[in-house]
Length: 72
Image 1 (cartoon, rainbow, N blue to C red):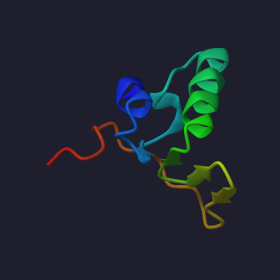
Image 2: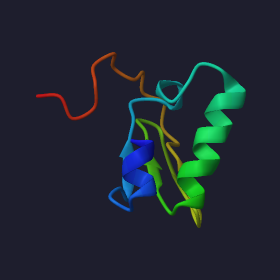
Image 3: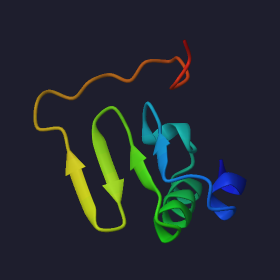
Image 4: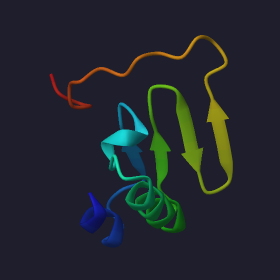
């Protein structure tokens, strides 16, 4: 994913949860910073993060599935 972002081939990063980036909070913030700095929108089950907007689910939060996003 990071290489696709560097190459300009990614606009949205769909994830079931932010923990899919890393369980280490320092690494997670580093990856989020990288994605947002390259204009990528991060979309999870409960939030949307983009360089100019943050949106969070106001209803009861949804438990993310353990399957890979986009898997059929």
